[in-house]
Image (cartoon, rainbow, N blue to C red; front, side, top):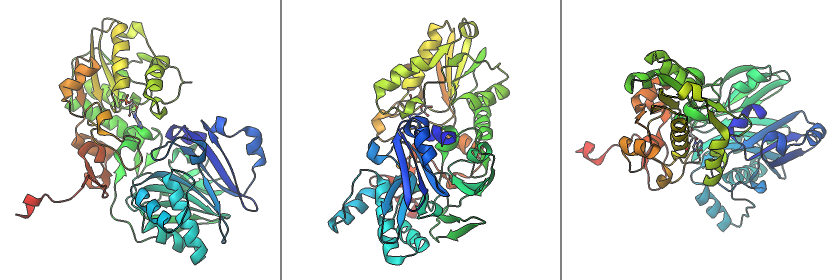
Length: 441
Ligand code: AMP
């Protein structure tokens, strides 16, 4: 779980089968949430784990995962990454039928529906298909039904999920880096709409028949995933480097030094330096003991922790024209402070280059970017944003450039936060590929 800690830092949990499913959960990073002694006593042949980054439901102990329930059929545990867009409707509909819910998380809805269906069918595979048919949204899920372990991916493959071999058999994980680190072997991505069961000697695949094309989240390659993971056939590091190369072609600037924003802008900066020919140098030192700042739900926490996290190297920066390269700007709070840090360290000019196009629209599929007014780019031109950041210039990669760098076609990606056109119906938003009315004229 610590290998995937970058994906969520609010809570962590693990569930294993040992004469029934037993779970251990807590708030914070995995090593804080799960005490070594308790883990030592939690023995089982199969298990699932989760680190949480909340998008729906508060960051609280009762929303920690895996969620475990007991049914007539047996025990069930579920760990979910993603977001169910029709969660509120499903919950309201079920409440009207007399169902009760204990938490605000959308994952509870899925497990309750599964528990109910499995009690009726007695067949987990059939029940997963039944439940998937009524879910709209993104979900990469690991599921235990007593000792059986399943992994399933939503019909558009929005969030990542893959399978591989480990010393003890087979496992599923959000990112391939898990298998490198555990001394296992990455095998393949789980396909959109696919359900796999991890058996001792085989991975049994069931196509649910629900797959409807692809809509992989672009933000995984830009920021969320680790650079050494390979997602849906494309190594994240290579994608980020290509983004940097493209950014240098699209947004060139006369400058003396490329300074990466650690750690998220590192690989993008390498690419920018390679193509521009401008030297690359570490100019901001990072305190590695301060976690990812986005995860802190309060904006105030985020602001102070940027100063705690980064310290400029004056010898690299003083009297130089600096290009700061980072992966993305969401609220702009972090970059504004970094520009100030670099200016205070004596930079002559500060140019900002960003490895994703302006994020202007909310994400409904698993990234906690919910309201338009929080985005730096909402209602502002690039020049306005540059002024807000106090930067001498600002340049974003284009959507076409980003799509090229990722290496999947635009129709296989979710670009909703950039274009406002989403791969699934969301109330009040446009659906991608929808023809404009005048195109029917
Ligand atoms: P900001 O200060 O909001 O512009 O964000 C600074 C960094 O945190 C950028 O690298 C963003 O990609 C990342 N970030 C901001 N908000 C989120 C979020 N809600 N979820 C994940 N990453 C985020």
